[in-house]
Image 1 (cartoon, rainbow, N blue to C red):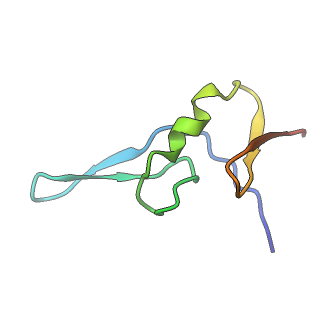
Image 2 (image 1 turned 90 degrees about the vertical axis):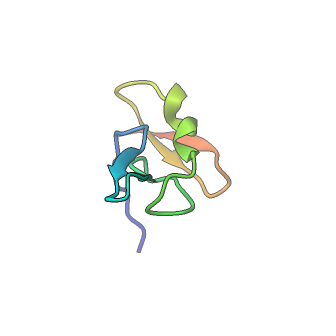
Length: 66
């Protein structure tokens, strides 16, 4: 079954590890390397506020009408 999960963040969350290193966790839901960020959030930077979008497997974006 498919489901739509709305995510509003368009940048990753930095998690600092005990050894002083950091990992970046995806918050946009588009990373192909979940739960880690792969830079896919850059696709979301041109989204218009107040609109909801769906990203298709080929990377194209369509607006979801509510």
